[in-house]
Length: 452
Image (cartoon, rainbow, N blue to C red; front, side, top):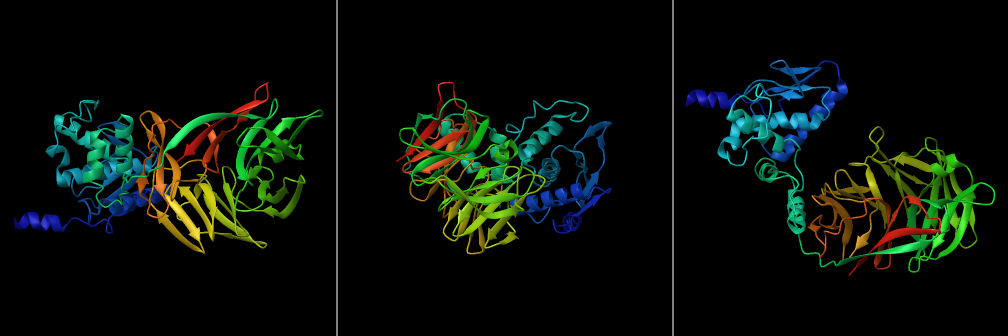
């Protein structure tokens, strides 16, 4: 008993574990972050492993692998060339926690391992069960309640019971968002916009009760690009504002989600941007700022109370900035976003970390991971519309903007329009507008969600 106590005490904590590399600083940092996430999500003090070696190549019994667990008190090895360093690190840490807590041994009917091949690496039934457990654990923590609720509502199972088990028994400290009644009824329909033949649509917003499209269209001489104003109820074209003919400028243009006048950013895709304000009634455009160094390549922008906010999750340059009165500052965002909307005092966004707000200079984060959409729009009483993935495809879910709780609409299993690049809320409707080209008859189809 004394020996067992001494061995147990020798186990390092997560804080004491080291990450050692062979010169790949980026890979070392990724592994360190994955280790910190695993510690936070599991809530354990540690697993009996002194650290992680990040190696150029990892081999087990002559086979090149993404990672290897050497048993209690042995160093974990992870390949710097792994296609997913996070998952590789978590996979080996899951082996360690299984060794320490005996999950695969206690659940032999759940972690069978029948589908585990390569008898050289997994020669015994025990080894295959252990590998099945690690595979069910290697994706890290997630909002499993939402996954299971959507799967139950839509009659499918994305991950299987092993994944559900590891979420419930390994990732016990991960913050879980409850599923609460939403009372939101979503009814889906379709509508056709009359734009004229050969109109290419790239973006859409709402302005003054009308639908505004960023588009280019053929003319008598060449092609024009600019804005088209459309009646959202009838789909009839109301007016157009020609902003130019340059294909490079059109490719770099994007509409700003605004709480006031219509604004857009223009400029070459990889160059600085100009901020314009457009008066649809007169067809005039005013330059508000020139040469702004803004995030590009998939960035989303919002205008709130005389401030422009732009955020981008682009993998090589994640960045969130604010511009006002000639001053541009970088914001230290918890996680740059992929959907943004103005709110009083700032903006809210869907990000890889969840639902974020930046109001009066302060950040708040609700960890609603795995939800979102191309735009952030309200539905019902305090909900934000989002999608999550189910076995049948992307389905509708809701996020409570105050608590982060998940809710399902009365009919979540209407597969969402994956092609929609813009969600535009006008009245009780959300218009789902995709990027594309109108038909020879001048018609452009969109989807419509009505919330009750």
